[in-house]
Length: 174
Image (cartoon, rainbow, N blue to C red; front, side, top):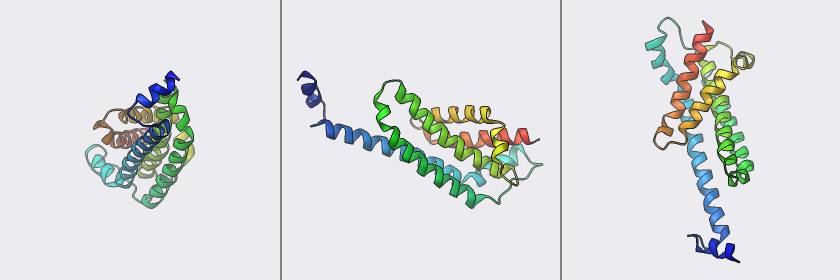
């Protein structure tokens, strides 16, 4: 009985409205993250071209994979949103909620940005080549995912991840 009084004392009239608010906030924030990753993926070629001019003048960025890269990003975004909905109940478990959210963001960032960066480095993107360096790519993805917890900085997180993966893949290609 006291638990019910506590729930009605909260700013929501019912538990239903409270959970609906949380689901809405969660979906909107994840949609913002997916949108930022998508925009970064869409504009990765011009972004990386400017980085290339400064740091890799002797090399050339491959520009043949733009549409395939966008298709890959759309596929990963849909999978991410479905996984987010499935994992939503886990967000009510303290500590596990942070681990689950970071894991979801890391997967999205790793899968999308490693492909984008590899598409700008290699003539033919081989998943085996990316898998050989999975630890470094996961570390870059983890660092990029942490940006999503800091307002304002989260806008720059995907760009940091894209540039970092490009630099890393360029350095191991040499």
